[in-house]
Picture 1 (cartoon, rainbow, N blue to C red):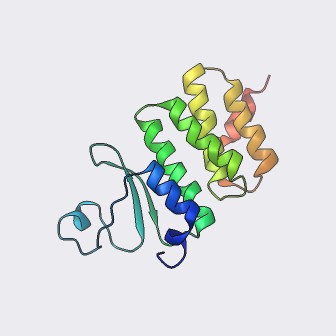
Picture 2: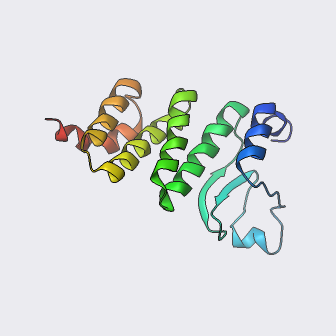
Length: 152
């Protein structure tokens, strides 16, 4: 990834402005086994206690690395739970990277986060409607299928 993604100015800016990056060798005797690093690149989003919240395995081109990292940050914030901050991450993917493979999952999680915060069923219905319109072949549409039954 050093040859492509990590030299991209947008990726460098995002990582430096948003994350606390740490690079370690897969063979690191302490952290390699702790985080089950078997292949490189493996990117982890950890919480403040060092608990893994999200993992990616393998190469991401620059245009896909940022949405993938945003999804991981959003999931970590969802689990904290800081749903408004999670929604910010998910919305950023939806708005800035709508063609990304991470966009359907971000749309789903954004709607779920909003539902948890508001208890407004319209947020769940919107997940189904938006996925059906924009990502009809996504497995996330299948997961959202029960929400279509909530339509009034």
